[in-house]
Image (cartoon, rainbow, N blue to C red; front, side, top):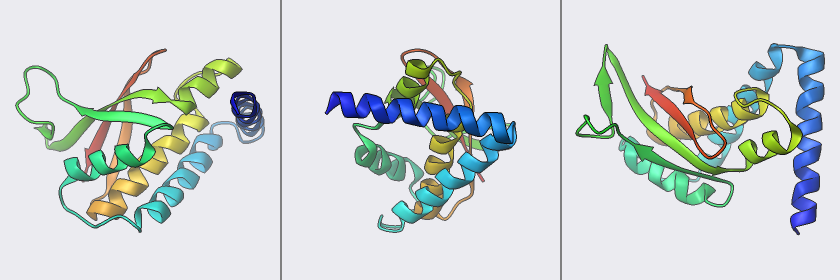
Length: 153
């Protein structure tokens, strides 16, 4: 089973590398859109809710084993949902992530097309569940975890 997974990870890495060679910077837009469509499709089966925090917990439970993430707040904040400079957002920490492991296995940088697929997926699912538009930004990438900022509109 592990050997099969590593083979699929290698194939995904080669597909992404080829897509970047052919489409250049447009590769990010293609994979983001694909992830977002998939997120919307999967989340159609979730109960609709306005509670963004609850929606994220439900999504995290569903994805456990592929992408482990949790909501996070800086020490100086009282709640997970933060309002600053006219923006409403939540920080997400991604721990065990098959995307990051695939990128490391293939010597690819984080933040590129494969990460954009995950970004799109999370945004699509959140939009479908909550009815709110969203955007996901990288705050920090690392070998053991990534910090993302989910901006809600």
